[in-house]
Amino acid sequence: MANLFGKLAADTLGLSDIGTIISPQDFDKVDGDDYIMHEDGEKIFFVIKSKSDEYVFTNYGLLHVDGATAVSKKRVVRRYDFYTHAVSHVTLETAGTVDLDIEIKFHFGEVSFSIDVDKKQLELLKDLYKTLFEIGLLQQKNQTVVNDGLLSLKMANEALGRNHLDGEALDIIKSITDYNFMWTKQLRATYHVKDYTTIYEKYLNN
Figure (cartoon, rainbow, N blue to C red):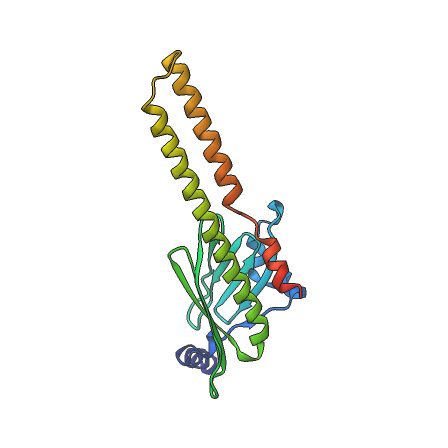
């Protein structure tokens, strides 16, 4: 009973939510490792673990293991892939004189995260901050290129539609449709990046 009240008190005070950055040699010991797509080349680069949560950052995105509290041991696993979720609003809040923790905040798509970390690990958290910030910038740049490319394709099709075309109408329509599909597919394949290993290695391997 005393142990339960101790856990409840820690949750109330927020002490149980202060996360610890896990060393790479212990990545295979975290719960999130069981849900990584190792078969598809997914790799863990950064882990923050508190008493109730794990935040596992991989070359493909974020795996959040939302877990046990003082009164529950239920675990919920959620994935946020870079391919489908843009990273934005990345901020890092350092500790004041009496603070026990520092805080990193960011969005994956429309989902916001705020993670408290032991202030003794500030230097390590700075590396994650820089990694997420650069990934967000690259995603934004790539999306601009995709949008510009799609707009250019639309303008070209509209211009084509205003001119007389010789030949069988169905053949022409099929050729234009096939070209538009392949061009759009290639554009998205090039600029909707799935794997951000190079950015992780830039900041986390120093």
